[in-house]
Image (tube, rainbow, N blue to C red; front, side):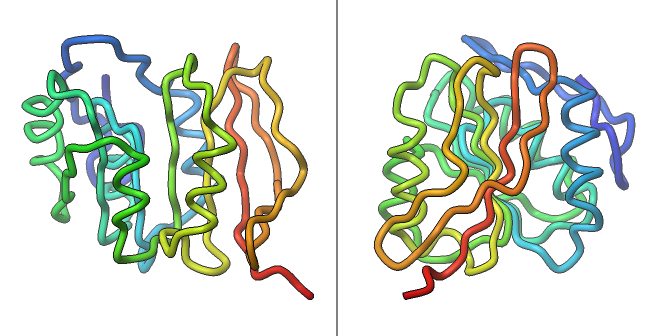
Length: 184
């Protein structure tokens, strides 16, 4: 797998052992083209796997960047892959749900790439909305099977996720959600 843009364009990374569904090159290029210049933005990669999404963000100027992965089989590869980053990528090894509960900082962009069989996508988004993880005006990108659908908008407490757009890539889709304060 290769980094598709930024200062690390063309750099090859390793694929970790175990079950992995690496984000397609075309999808990564399109998603990051939509996000534009990431300088000055913080970035969180949940369900990081190989770390390719965190590397794409760091390669395009995001800082700070964090990667969260729960599978211990991916630890060594994730650390090795993220070591090529132009900015430090902080790697956390725990379940995404636990990370969300314990989060002490907020991020401008959060990329969620749970396994396609993961049944708690709405609960995950609700947990992010309830936490301080997403900065106000922050974006959450959810990579999911194309056959699953997400509501146009939903709220939790005083926050609202608004679906800005959905991009389709083969059998998958990426939803771009904007987090806003709920207008009372």
